[in-house]
Amino acid sequence: MSSVQSTRTMFRVGGSIAVLTAVGAIAWSVCSEPAIAFEACAAPICVDQAWTRATPGGSREAALYFSIANNSGSDEKLVGVSTAAASLAMIHRTTITDRLVQMVIVGDVTIPAHGRVLFSPGGYHVMVTGLKAPLKEGTVVPADLSFASGRTLEVDIPVLKASALGPAASTGPASSGSGGAPH
Ligand SMILES: [Cu+2]
Image (cartoon, rainbow, N blue to C red):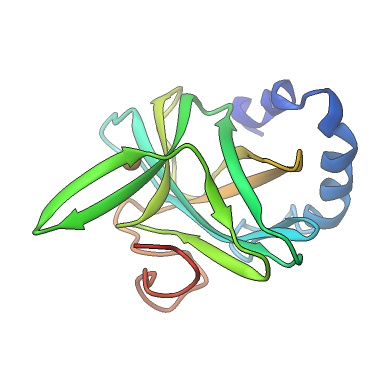
């Protein structure tokens, strides 16, 4: 039990408690397993393929990656992310043009109806700064995703080794060509 997990309830705000309770009943039944086979839903929004990298050497920054599926008939918007593990979490997008790599802050990300958006290296990611402790392989980073509809989704993001290239369940580097992510 980490101090990180014990503080996560501070991010639960008034209207979202019922939703989070429902998520807990569905998604955390595998809590005794290592957090590898991972999926969390606030139906019809589901997050899977979540991962981040260990931060040896005292780095205070990390990038969180995951895939968001929207199984409803209307668009949904991710409008914010927070985590008890760091002082700040921002939605970023990496763009590469003429070998120039840039990161820009993104206000929101639309998950199209019946679509999916992949957060992966070289594209969308959640940048966390001011980590309160180094991320250790085998632990999880708790994060709360907020959507324009008022839905919130609490996810535990598995920390993989520092050299990881994609989520634990994948067989290769995450492809930035799949899903609905614009480039
Ligand atoms: Cu970034």
